[in-house]
Length: 227
Image 1: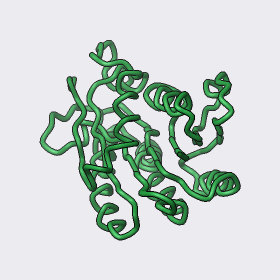
Image 2: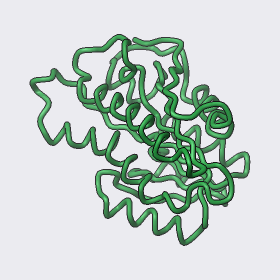
Image 3: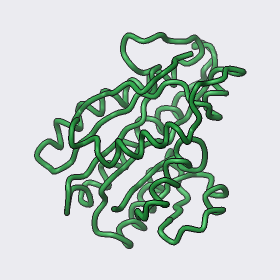
Image 4: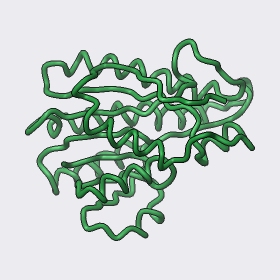
């Protein structure tokens, strides 16, 4: 299968990419930082240096993917950006970056991939959100930009499931709880999460391959702990 993962240079994305690679899937990793991925030696790995805040950079990534394959089976919108500041101190540029990476990039990238999705078999788009963006859960001071952007991607998931219901494409969203990543450390310094990235990656890997047999347009909480 042909897989696209954004934000695969560290944490959950890096571990998820390795699972797909080890199981002989063809993996396209769109990431700003490529150094970690370049340590891997899988012949089925395609590293694409991509700035997800730039439509031009996304267009170049899509052009590369099109030059290699004629269909995509799974897209995992995993890349995330966070700012941890009081609401009144978040400047517009910081807010813009968070929304570009967390919302606008998945929106635009999905648009550009439409003609590759669902061509040979049912495609699955997996949006990675957060319990901070899940309605009714605890919210935390300092994370207004991040949590609101993650709430936006949950809404987009429901919209796209409706848009694509006749296009052989399923769209679901996983709202992740606490996992011991660099981003968690930025949000909650000193907190120790109950799960490591490799553990959450196993869940995402299985869900990406099988979840669309059971769900479409769903926002599913995946959390054993929320700080």
